[in-house]
Length: 184
Image 1 (cartoon, rainbow, N blue to C red):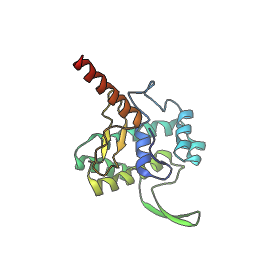
Image 2 (cartoon, one colour):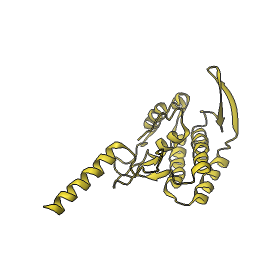
Image 3 (tube, one colour):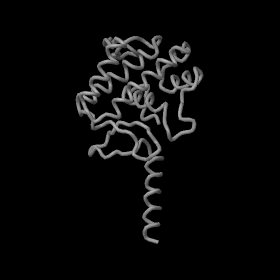
Image 4 (cartoon, rainbow, N blue to C red):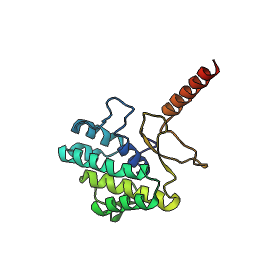
């Protein structure tokens, strides 16, 4: 499940990468081949990367996905920080000030031509900022089994439990049916 606009938000990009594998969907693997990787890259606003993606990039993005998932699954801020620092170091996430369409932005790491490094730097830098500001309490894995979708909780009271409305509705229906069975 892609939240917000992953072309603009590093946290949404991280969620989109992690959610390219989900046990609720069939098939679970949403990046089975280079064509699907290219489609994913277009969805997340990485047109240049989509044009040049190859088999090596597919393997590297899948590896990145597993490394980012650790951050969503842990309840230990130190473990999340270690995982993110490792990614940031590996992808050489040095900040660069760039002008785009008349405004300035900070980009971390290499450009889109180094696909997994670019995605890793963008996603890990954004998640590192969330850890700095909130710890790991804003990261979660969907509470509607068998879904394993990741999410960033942006609610004021940190009450988000599901990756999307579909899972929230499905869980509510399951609870409703269970209550009716107990009452009957």
